[in-house]
Length: 83
Image (cartoon, rainbow, N blue to C red; front, top):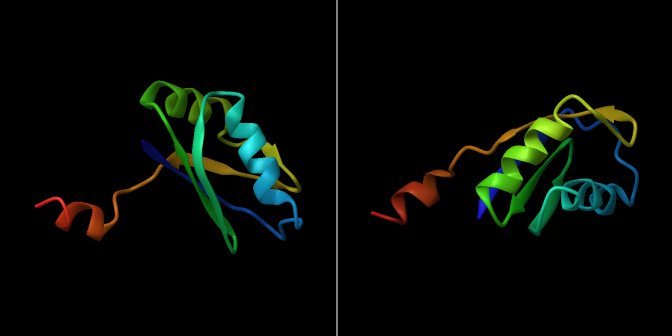
C-alpha cells in the first residue's frame, strides 16, 4: 500500500472525497481516501499505480482547486511501530 498526499484543496464541495477517489481510481485500486480540511491522503494498492496517479494528477484541477499530489511521508508511528 502506498500513501499519497494531496494538498492545496480550497473550499472542497461536500462530495469532494468521492471526486478524489474517482480521479485516483483511473490509475489503479484505491484502498483508502480521506479528506482532512484542506488536504487529503489517498492510499493505493501498488507503487506503479501510485506513481502513475502522482504524475497524472499533480497540478491538475480537482473541483475548484489546482492540487499538489506527491508521495506521502511515513508517519512517525509507521516508523517506530515497525522497530
